[in-house]
Image 1 (cartoon, helix red, strand yellow):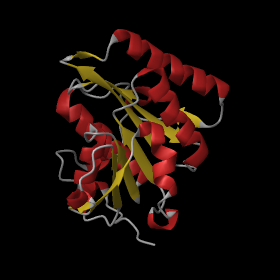
Image 2: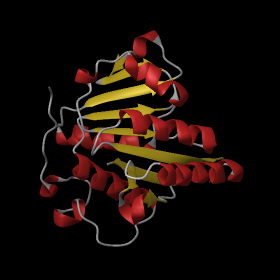
Image 3: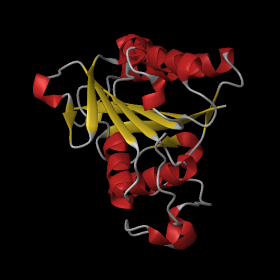
Length: 212
């Protein structure tokens, strides 16, 4: 089984050095791109993922940033992208494995993959968990398939610079709270600012959820 390279915090090349690269004592993350970078560095060093799985037609900001971090460190992690639009010449591109599917068919898509080829821990990220159905689909996948210390990252997209339609946003938040209340001890909000980041870089919110 391949193993990720373990990187000391002092080796980071993302403008953060020493303890600041992996440890944040403030109650909130900084805004903008720096906030997203800080959040992803914090998550990467916390998890040291062996498999990075992205779900969606377009890469999530978190997924793309984590890939760049892993490549910069020379980590031998597995990169998997699940997308509904898959061309034959994209089955493997720049070290990424592409699978045809979407958030609602995630279980069926990954069932065709030998999990030996997807070593733990995982970080699964998606920018399609908008609305009640999308959020619940992601959360129930985490309930059934994530293992202790795996992470689920949910990005709520904005549309034309505005927050994802308010109704959908409220439904997604409602689904998240309902799921956490109905399934105690399964997922925990874990990350900067209580596991919810507003980086103001095209997304309304980014939730970090750790499998217990």
